[in-house]
Image (tube, rainbow, N blue to C red; front, side, top):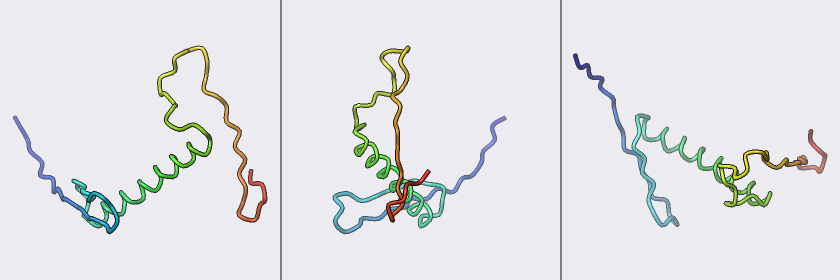
Length: 88
């Protein structure tokens, strides 16, 4: 026996001034919420890209290790508050 479930689907989109292409999302969320969630996700991804660049990691990282015996390099990160204090 085949059962069916109805799912409401929405198409959300916007084209902000200054962008080359519009943003389009196919989602089950309400359109306004979907756009907000997507914007927040993009902020996180942009932050990771910026951090990779600052650490010199860039696109040279390969998810598959060529030598199984060697582990990933250790990164020593030092965080500072806006006033210059070192943060643990």
